[in-house]
Structure formats: structure tokens, C-alpha cells
Length: 93
Image (tube, rainbow, N blue to C red; front, side, top):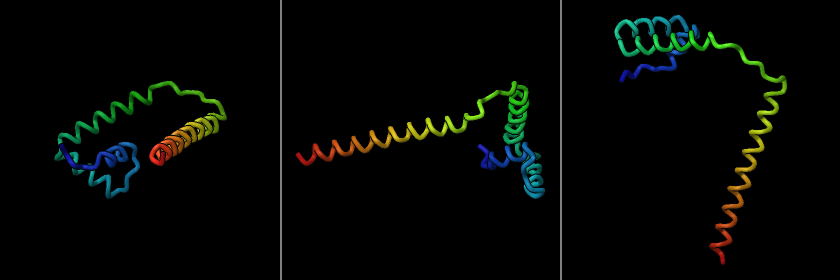
């Protein structure tokens, strides 16, 4: 398996690389069949994703998501803390 940084291939495909990085990727793609195939797969996937219809979300989606996430994290903390307390009590008795 090629050790070339796959994130750099993704950035290259998105046009988010410096001129030096672009040249480095281009030179690598000339000699590495594995990365050439990988970037072609990434191109196809990108084309398919871009064809998908857009999705409408409610204006307060982010707020609702953050609230649900905070609630779930709080549940975990309570569970973890309660579990530890029970174990400590059991060890003391």
C-alpha cells in the first residue's frame, strides 16, 4: 500500500493545495498507479455526490442538534459517575 498522504489527494481534488503541493501530487500520480486509481475513484464519488439533490434543514437545526448532544453527554456523565460511586461503595462495605 502506498504511504502517500490520502488527505493531500482529497485536498488536491478540491483545489485546496498550494502550487508546491499541486506539483508534488502531480509528480506522484505520474509514478503511482495505486494513487492514480484512488484519485479517479474519489473523482467519481465527488461527481455522484454533487448530483444528489440538496437537503432543506430547519433554521434551528444546529441549536437542536447541540442540545440533543449535550443531553446525551450529560446522561453518560451521570451514568459513569453513578457507576463509579456504586463500585466505590461496594468496595468500602
